[in-house]
Image (tube, rainbow, N blue to C red; front, top):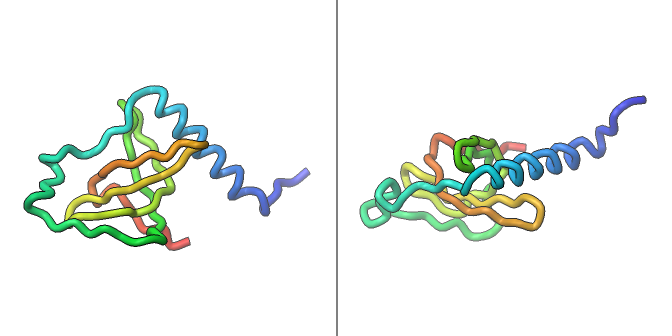
Length: 104
């Protein structure tokens, strides 16, 4: 018996959501601090909808997880992202080099 290529993306998404929710139980979602963001000194770009799809590394407590996210805002050094898992929406700031644009 083979696998369903049609449903592969759905199962990948469900697996990622389960990984995120498990990591969220291990610790709080970490975000860059105001000092790290330096928002008073750096310009902030706020992107209108639809947001750009990205892949980003985030950290829940000690656990790092790579997530499919939407780019909501950015500075020259950081990215403000949001992502969903189940019925929860998570938002945080991460360093720009933790984010890659999803070309797919």
